[in-house]
Image 1 (cartoon, rainbow, N blue to C red):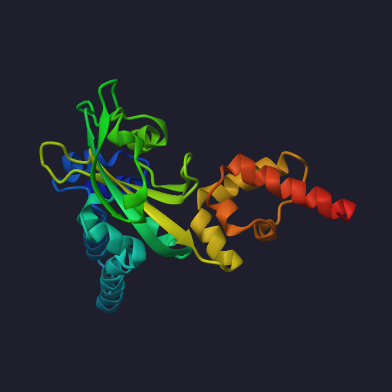
Image 2 (image 1 turned 135 degrees about the vertical axis):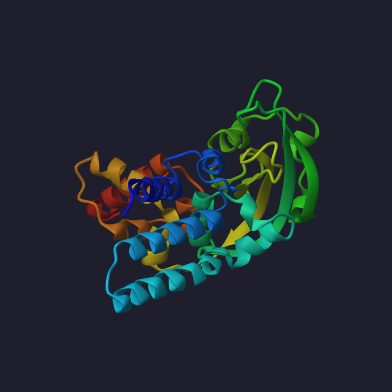
Length: 276
């Protein structure tokens, strides 16, 4: 296996893990850094690596078949309620890889989408970072969101949680600060070759959560947040159990910060110990 091929596979794995900025993918591989392109490129490199290793024909066929099966599963990651909401207005290629994974896991706890707001992002610098002149403009409202007066309709300055989302590029699930509605906020990158991978829109979904979800689904949907909760609880010398997540309602798990959730769990444990 050539050193260049090894280097490419290493780079691809770093991109897929979110350890390298997606905007650099096109510089390294000559194609846009969409989830599908990244996976296709990885499978292509793996196929070349298998052939270069000069294994027996049967072994190569088996490996090639495995790669083909993996490729067919790309579509499985972009199906469901949340992806349909994105596709009503945008292309799935406008989601970065890590957000595809987050949405795939989160939609297992989402019951319905009750409304939506599309914001256009403007005034970012050449690197796609917020500046003092950055702003949000309401482009479209649907469903229950039509009843909501967005503060960005009167004050377009990019600030608060949406500024953090634009800066970090992450999906956000929580509650609206003013109306306390459950929201899911999705950053959408540009399709323009002049501004690749710069966040151009924000899609805010007003959602309702499922009433009952099993523990394993909660753990998967929480992602890294579960580990954050666990670490905070363990700071109080409490032996962590994933079952602690069942102590709080789903709305708290996906509507509060890890710190608040950990505090709630510890309070429940103390009350249980006291027999309250």
